[in-house]
Length: 321
Image 1 (cartoon, rainbow, N blue to C red):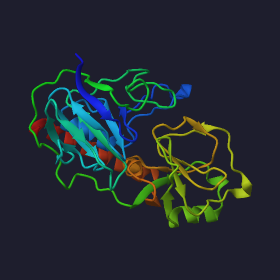
Image 2: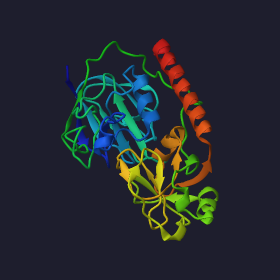
Image 3: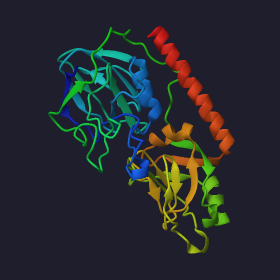
């Protein structure tokens, strides 16, 4: 049964309710949306004993101010937005109790781009087309299909069960760190014939900087323009997915993210491997990328290792939480 948990006193820069997204309607042209940093999102839920896909808040750069309407347990992961309860720092990647009447505040992220705030039982959200995720361009899901606004009331999705151990969380060796310069591993894309040899050399040897024009749809990069062979900059629309790297006529790569379109007409020079997508999700304007090419087999093995790691963490949480 839903219960009121928080009232929004300030909404933050871009605060939305997300789960892992809606993938059943890609063939119909609907963007999946969902949490961009799926590792941080899932860990916030796992540490609270929630289902991994329970709706949580995605906070971007500047977090909200929330007043608790009921005592509940929360977990904050991802970028460190210096969360505080009534002015006292509480840290991240661990279970914390906030009492009725207290205020949860955030500052500006110094490193990283997005944080996730989960609550025991999950946040209530609009369920549409198989997902709770907010898709801003279509105004569906989440909180009435939009970002949070002042005076919104956030509710719990499911009744809170037994209280968890306060302070239970991840060890330092497991918590990701976010750097201004990252090595991003990629597989080469299917449209190699559309690029010159110089373009491939620049792609794997020169740095790219995250543009201010980046958003939930795509991370736009600045750097050495990647030249197209014979000036061909368009292709027949083909399928794209999370991590596809398109190169439009400008020669400036775009890494497609959660709110991406489902097909695209720009040549695809590469694809970010799944395990490195959280790094891209946490990149902020001015951060730099270096790309490293790996094989499909290497990418698959790394993903298997990631899934095994997540299963181990899930077992650990169930045993010790």
